[in-house]
Image (tube, rainbow, N blue to C red; front, side, top):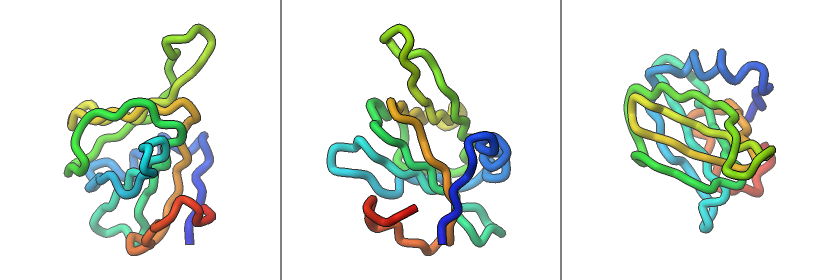
Length: 118
């Protein structure tokens, strides 16, 4: 079962998952949709970050001791915002044009399809 995290709670949930193991979990063939999975010892649930309309990615496919932050920034086009998922300590950055969705679910939850309802 997956639980959607409200935008207002992103920071608190990301703080709970500090120090976790992060990995690119699934992605569409065009990389326009991409899921990052965070798992942490002692937690039965994993945190999933779905990036929508991804336009840029830089960094490792998986890493230990994750310190992810999510924030909005001005795009190259005035008045348009982008969303960034960043781990400065580990050299990771994902940029999306349509934001992100955070959800928690069992670590064994396969998330095999983007068609799977969240």
